[in-house]
Length: 145
Image (cartoon, rainbow, N blue to C red):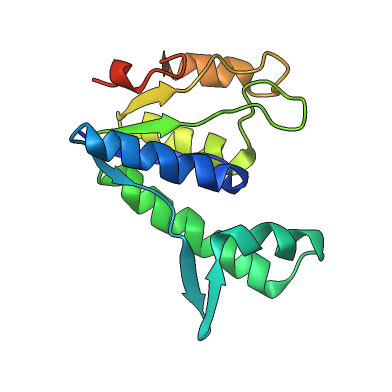
């Protein structure tokens, strides 16, 4: 199966670890790039959060724009997405804005949506997530079929 991993860039390390595990099981896996080139600058995805802390900049907006477009293409070319909604800052099953957008694209394109764990009920779009009928895998990647 061809799978695109969707998650907050905050979970980059975990995303790359799970990518490897899925590939070891024979899946083809798309994920956001570790680095991107914008205006002859190489920007590492983990630097993204440092950019964000330093206020909204053109570089930050450009990085976000490139990542969104590229990830939508990955979803289009996949059979499914895996949403890594780990706990973040005390929020259980965190799904950020970009990840929610990616889920919407996958849903619209009739892709399977696998969710790492049940989403946090406090999310403002909790009902919308459930209406996309995700398959909750409870952290078990062997449930991805």
